[in-house]
View 1 (cartoon, one colour):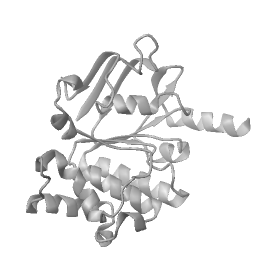
View 2 (cartoon, helix red, strand yellow):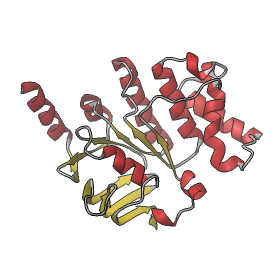
View 3 (cartoon, helix red, strand yellow):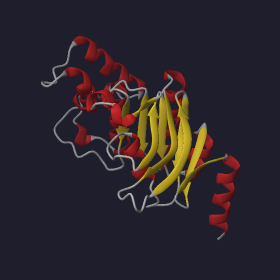
Length: 236
């Protein structure tokens, strides 16, 4: 999977794009981290990449095909997303929540077949929560819940997984574990994984590619540039 952005503009008003002139390529097999200040447009960009928001201009291509030409179901088989907020789900088991990722394949009634259950079991094992499969989602810690949502995205079997601040509510060990998990998924399963984050130290440590939103544009940056930015903030 390759996501190619050419002169892309995103936002809510054509007269005032949040980010414009975006030229970037994001590839499978890599963990790509998207950095930048709060309210600068990272979430808007991710929502546009998943089709939740229409683009304002330019090209947004998934493996050479314009994103706007995909049906909702087709797009759900290409890109999955894990959002910032804690999942507002109650009275479902871990296995059932992960099973929601099969909805692009199970039809209107959402009936799971043996092949679907095999995919779900593999996703739970991949993120290390298979022993929790019968636990109710509301009984889990924040870190465990985030793993369930990643397992759900993995069960969706999309070549691309986008995550909006997936470590926002986690303690540091859980943050590092999540980054390590996502890096492993990108490398071992050839997934395109793009996440927004404020955890710059972990991004520098684990990312294969770093992108920064700044001054209403998007730039590729090096680990050294990110470290220098961190030092400047700490020094100030």
